[in-house]
Image (cartoon, rainbow, N blue to C red):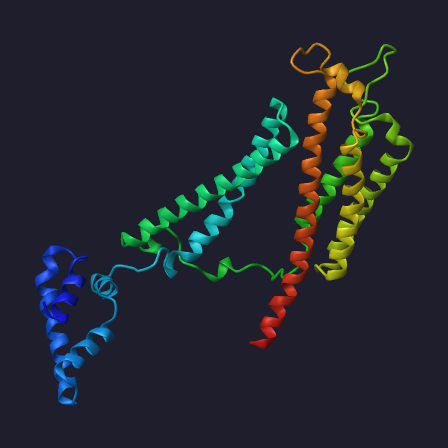
Length: 328
């Protein structure tokens, strides 16, 4: 077989059999014309044939072009729909991880086991979401489906009301302040509101009563400062490096004491867990308190790391975007 014969055979092998004769004839004719032109220009037949086939490129790629078959996983027509759906669904992954984390914690797993289960479940769910969403869009792409068949065309009505590059939204502020106020209320209310009482009828709090001599007022003050800071961020309306630094300091002022209190078994009240698990045979109050301490410790570390990372990411991102816009 000549180089041309081998090239045509390689190109036709991925095409339907009923198209082999027509495409093979056209391709062979095009190659012969190009080779004759090079020979007329002074090249040898061998060199001319090799040069023409080299210019045509990979026969599989040529065959895909002739058949109108895309050579990509997600093409430009569906890419934005794929990306937007993926970002929306990926929020399910950490939710599933958090649910399994709580289930394992209640089931008696240790803090390390809980953390590993939560993280591994989050990663596994995220990979499954990415895989199946990509498969669906890849099938749509290769079946010749057009975007207009299932999605409305873009119009100017879909433009955002304002550009929030690095800005703090009112919704984020309300949510953050609400959560901080909720924590403050819970910390204070649990002192006098409990389902368990001691022999004198005094409610048994969830948090160690001794902490109210110093640490609880300090933690409540930091929570109050964080609530005020959230309002300040909304007033400034932009994520700046200075605000990210203050955010980092406040998160550390809250997280470091909590981590120390939890790791030294000083945060939770042993009497509360003795009362809750007094009739349980498989594990007593101290064991359950240790598990709850480990679970709270994981949550504190994850939330602090997420909050600090998010603050710096959003503070630095507008700088890089604005500098790129200036360069353009």
